[in-house]
Amino acid sequence: MRIATWNVNSLRQRLDHLARFVQARAPDLICLQETKVDDSLFPAEELAALGYPHQQRRGQKSYNGVAVLSKQPFRATDHRIWCERDDKRHVSVVTDGDFEVHCFYVPSGGPIPDPERNDKFAHKLQFLEEMAAWSKIEAKGRKCLILGDLNVAPLENDVWNHKRLLRSVGHTPGESQRIAALLEAGHLTDLGRHFVPEPEPLYSWWGYRFPQSFEKNYGWRLDHALASESALSAVTGLEIFSESRTWERPSDHVPVIVDLA
Image (cartoon, rainbow, N blue to C red; front, top):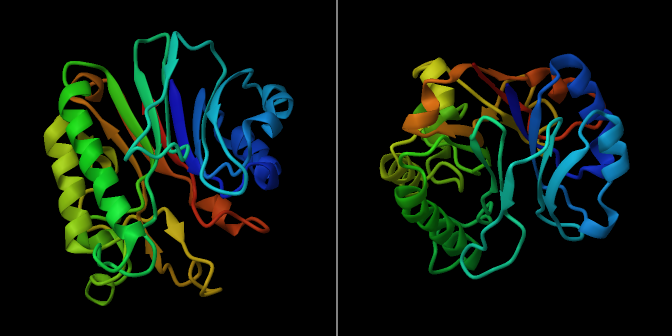
């Protein structure tokens, strides 16, 4: 089984890119973030035509939104509301192989890395803390995969310039500590660094603000795949599909692909 996760930054604008990615890598299941579409306008028929008739989504107009697409039926579906805000940041499915696949879109946190001055950053920290508490109970003893845009580049070589970016939201010590706490609480393995250990650079996001960010490789690793102890033995590989960042009008994120035996 091949599973991909991708922050598409507007699903309806990236349908052609999604079709191109499907042709290139043919994932069996796709987790999407920032779909930015209300459920009533979700392009279900177009996605079914791509080979994904089984769909679980939670969306809203213009912001956030998550979805899981599959070639095969789900055994179960679910979602959770985080921080008492129903802002469409999580959906989960159970596959035929009894894998629990959780698709997350963690809040970005706004521009100021101070929870007392920035409510958005406080929300992000609370969200990550709730994820850790949840994983301590839910991930142990289950074949659990957590995929999505976690909006944190936790390690030194997950950003293009560690010293310069330590005070930037997404790479602060407090955020990195909360990702470490999440991994520890659920006995989770960070698959990116399982297959590409530090100190090798590993990125999944190149910003729009600087037009040459991709060419100069000014990247961040914001998109993650985590596996519980029970799921880890099935994982055979991981790929970051950076080619999509070269396409016309691309998402600033690229797909992360996980292969399972």
